[in-house]
Image (cartoon, rainbow, N blue to C red; front, side, top):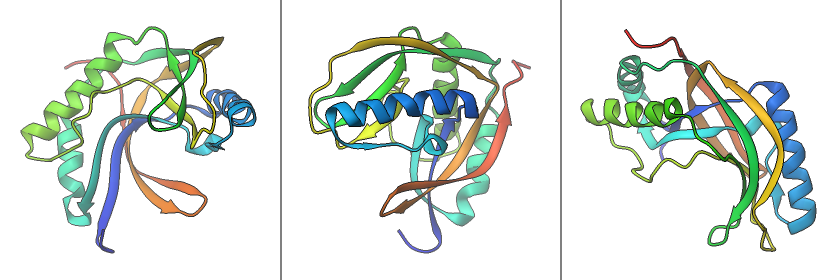
Length: 178
């Protein structure tokens, strides 16, 4: 990636209260199973990972996202688990609202319509709490964490030795369909 490239993704970003509660689970999970807990300020749910793009292409990403409409919705995180293959510990909702799925699909469609490539992996509603888990984790129910969603964001990530840092490039309010 050159100095004129940005590593970007569309995401949902929790409010401070929800992030703090999620981070507590991450610290506890890292203590139990090893690994590196994600800092509260970095917790998010990726809707679409775009990857490296030239800085001059960011306007095209914005134009694509401008066409996406969604009503506000709420997520309730109540499951803690891990993926065996990649050592990621996560928190997820047991029920994903249709609006969240439609928002991710809408962004993917808009990017495709604007000729913008992205990571085509299926959207999995989760927040990464821990990376590099050392021990297996059993799926566990946790006290629900409610997260009202009123916007989505375009984020730029900066890879650092202590983990990723994030910069918000733009926000879109969820206000319903036209």
